Image 1 (spheres, helix red, strand yellow):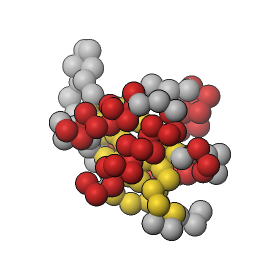
Image 2 (cartoon, helix red, strand yellow):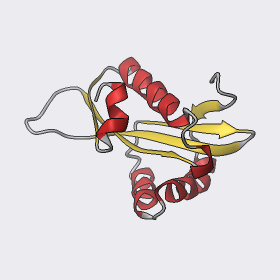
Image 3 (cartoon, helix red, strand yellow):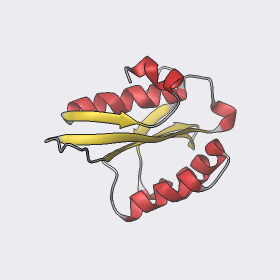
Image 4 (spheres, helix red, strand yellow):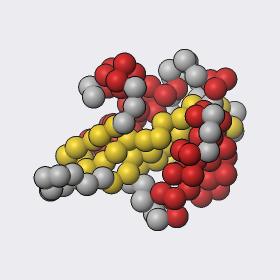
Length: 127
């Protein structure tokens, strides 16, 4: 749950179409939505959360297993994509999704969390 008037919850398969549309809208292209669909098809996400306002999904964040060189033992995760509907951006939804996800990564004893994204945005989370 959240103090911002919305609900953060686990994703369900019933959410997939809405999430794919949200991701495409947030990024203004299909590439990230295609990536998300591939991750789902391969059951390759470890942690996923959506943000819902009045029953409508307005945010999404995923963490998926990654590999490293040199090889590291333990759970290694990559954050992404993080998507918030354009009309709901800059309201703290993305920040709250990332913080919730990072807490879940910690609870799952993730050894490493990597992200590819805007350093100015992700620095607030310790990246």
